[in-house]
Image (cartoon, rainbow, N blue to C red; front, side):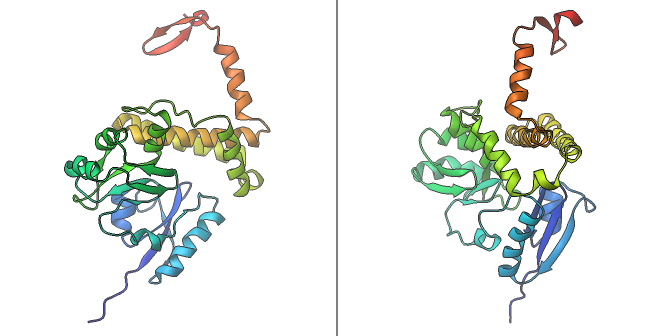
Length: 266
């Protein structure tokens, strides 16, 4: 019997991303938490080669981050290997068995959009503590790439702290990225402000859920938006930060109900 080819849906979550899936209900609604009116299907096809190329074309056209790997290549990993997407890295074992799997695979290295990762004595405790059971299979578990990148940047062995890789040069990289995607030519401050509120909502949800990786992701996204907003106002975010710090540096006050209140307001 001839096997039926799956249908690949090229979906768009406005302001967030463009992606591909064969199951909109499971991938977009269940896994990502969006309602059926919060996304749109741009195209659909049974040709994985076409849909994989088209995904990156539309990501570029709409001004989103373009995936490094084609959709079709996400399924070429050998059995027993670590696979990665833009947001996560997935291990080929249940969360309960991850410690043993990592111990037997020290030195394993894999590439992600956030850089090259490696399993070492120093990273194993973090990987075990932060792994989550896959929503699609309880025989696999995953981590958030951005959170692991932050951890590796600190050289720490527990909860991620301020990453030393976040230097002022990253603001230049953000501006270059935005320039290449036409954000400064075709965007405006009002649109970026609306996006900032959306990201603030994501941060609030992550804080309520006590989801540290999502908190890291949301804060990072807000920094990107603020960098672009400043540029659209002919400002540099570095100067804005310096100006704010110069104001607060010698400010006196006290903590009231969990917030710092300056002396003149007490």
